[in-house]
Image (tube, rainbow, N blue to C red; front, side, top):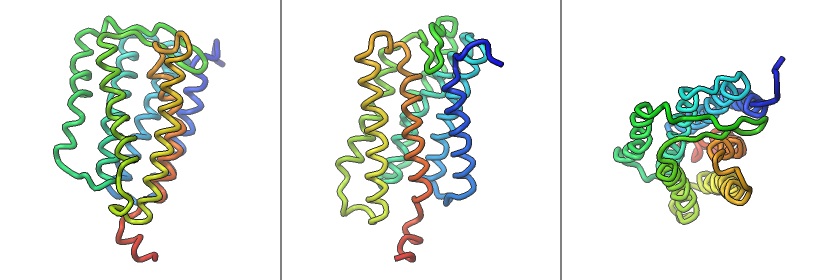
Length: 226
């Protein structure tokens, strides 16, 4: 039994996301975009599991706070790389999008003693850490680019099935990140918990991504099914 309900939502979301991952590993086509997308859901699961360790099991150490931020750091660039790959903007240079995440990954251990879990509740955790503003810019910019790309891509450039999936992804990202952004800005005290709140809202995105992966097949197979 737990001494409190702290981290309970994280445990629930992590459990559901693990089921989603297992289903995708069994039932989805293993093309590159799908593999990358499954990796993104794995990161969402890993964050929720880490938040449960922090809040539910009481490991509120600087190390686990750093691990939580480290996991979160790789989500925005991976999201953008998935969308670029899906929309046929393919280049080896796309991997350079991970450079900011790698910077934080190597810089933050040098100042790990400044990482603090300032609050835990049943539904979110709050963290204090260095370079918060710069980190926030790095976090939101790839997501903004994702939404723009999904909005402006011409329908004629895509296979009909991919066009449907483009709309699915756009809806998923919009209803995940815009409410999360407004929630953390308009409700007092939520800004410190922005990573946790966004990852909670991102469970919605995980559901959309699951549908996307199950339906995203190679264009050759889509053509043969027509």
